[in-house]
Image 1 (cartoon, one colour):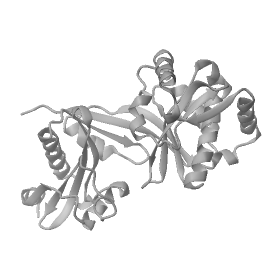
Image 2: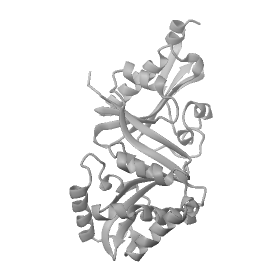
Image 3: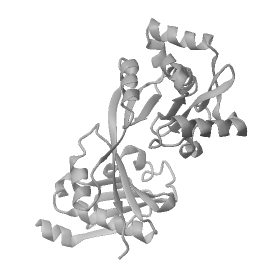
Image 4: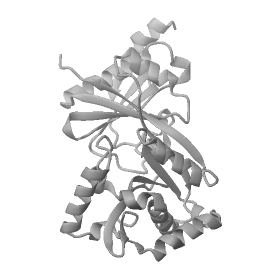
Length: 309
């Protein structure tokens, strides 16, 4: 069949994601394949469409409907044999139409540079999406990494403890302390960086802490856990300016990942994120965590505003 004959024979249709469709598992990432092999119920706000050539699935796309009219493209894939025929374009346009039908006004996607994303980025550009925007830098390590750090690291942690360092569960803070945290965030955190309230609904209460000096709130760390991946993402970390050069945030990370090690095991992963607009924090991460690092990457985003037709 010629490419035009193949495209004419295609059927792009929504998938009932509550049924067992193991053939689709090879057309997406392992974390989403669980929705097709019966391991996990699909969230109600997730939509999927498949490209069929006869009875054979050759493409799959998955989107997530978010609040405030935004849809996120989680995954799009076409079997290698059928790539460079315009099938990806048809599939992406189909998902854009489904997003519009769901009253979404914006489409976005995030991706890592750990693997070559050139084909996907080219597809997005072809379909009118924005140029990639650098979001954040990430570094990952097994959570027992503090046990492998040298004498200087251990001395830094002990020094913080001598100067009143402690950490308590984030969700135990008082309303007055929350107001203090919001004020510190307004006065000392870059306005372009995400606010901690954005992450609270999905934060792991076991691994999200308030950092204190002699009992007074001076910072915080929030963690979002993704059990099916074994990843624990430390998405926010802050201490007051006067404590930043004294290693206070690093001492907080030392304490919380050792707790992660106790709860989830030493081979669970801790992933640290810092905004692309924070080169200083990136340098600190690379300096202190380089020896324990499993991988480092940069994440990017592309967007498209959806107009009604």
